[in-house]
Every structure is written in structure tokens, then in C-alpha cells.
Image 1 (cartoon, helix red, strand yellow):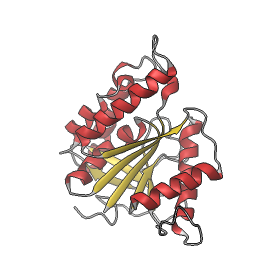
Image 2 (cartoon, helix red, strand yellow):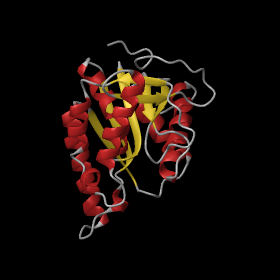
Image 3 (cartoon, helix red, strand yellow):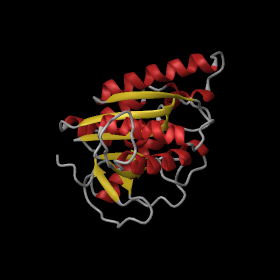
Image 4 (cartoon, one colour):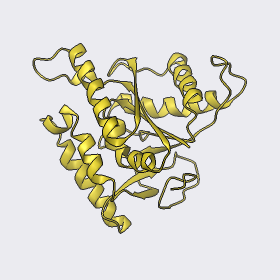
Length: 233
């Protein structure tokens, strides 16, 4: 089966669900990270926006190699995402190409506009990819389920529904995060410490060493379990 983790910026998919992605990649599933933008506007001193964009794409490739997943970065611009038919159609077409059974993305409530838009885009693309009445490059219709995952900027109303045991994958997850300059060097937020602690706290609740969580979209039935529904390990 195919799993896609779709984030607004390079680094979002990794920090939110990198351990889950590694768990399913190890089990033989095809896992792809899709970044709508590189997240290049947070460029460090001495680096231009374009230089940092290229750096973040390289970092995403290194992180993906550690986790054993594929990675794609689209050419939309950081902090300039808009909800439009163009981007919905592009994502829907890509989902028909990748054929994921499940997509993991941002929670719908966020202090970052790109994150909130990303969740809306995934929802709209689900409909467009799944309806055969839309002709998207001649590709057959493909419907996917989607879940939300945890990001420190997206926590308003986020209450986990699914706890995934990632105890065996967590060290590799931390290694993958360390490939990103911003994770290890940010002066505004302690990314590495936060996600290491979050995995520990979620593991405590799950009665495992480490865990990452997922949340059903608003309005869907809530069911709790140890893994992504429909993905057998």
C-alpha cells in the first residue's frame, strides 16, 4: 500500500509523522513525503531565500534517505500559499499518480496560514482525485482517506484519536530530523527537544516507550487503535 505525508514546508512531514513513515516503509509500504513549498522564507543570516530553498530541498532528501521514503517538493512559495483550483487540481493529479491509501497532513487549526490551507487543499483534492468526472491528465480516479498529525503550530483543538507505537523507529526519526538546519539551530523554537519530548509523552499515554499520533478529520467517526486503519504491519 502507498502512504503520503503531505506538509506545507520541507520539514513538516518529517517532524509530524516521520517515525510513522519509517515504520510503514520498513514494513514494505511505499511512503512519499510531499512538500507544497520548501519553507524558504526562514532563511538564516547570510543565506538568500533561493539559497535556503535549495538547502532545504537537499535536507529533505537526506532526511528521506534516513527514513527510507521518497520525497517531492513542489514549486509553490513559502508563506504565499492560496486556496485555488490550480493547486487543488495539481495535488489531486499527484494523488492519482501516487495512489495513496492514506494521506497524513496538518491539523485544520493552525497559527500558520500555510498549514491551515494545506489541510483544506488535501480535503478538496480528495474529492477531485476521487471523482471520475474530473479528467486529470487521463489518470484513473483514486480516492484516499486522510488523517491529521501533530505540529506545534497546529495544536488548537488537536486531541489525538490514534496512537502509533514508534518505539523501534524513534532513534532513526531523530536522526532524520537532525538533517535539517532549522531543527538543530532555530533560535525561536527548540524543535528537536520538543519533538523528542512529544514522542516520549505520547508514548507514556500509549504505554509504550515512544508514540506519534493521528487525528480523524472533523465529522468522521472516532476510533482508537494502535496503527493507521487499513495498514497491516
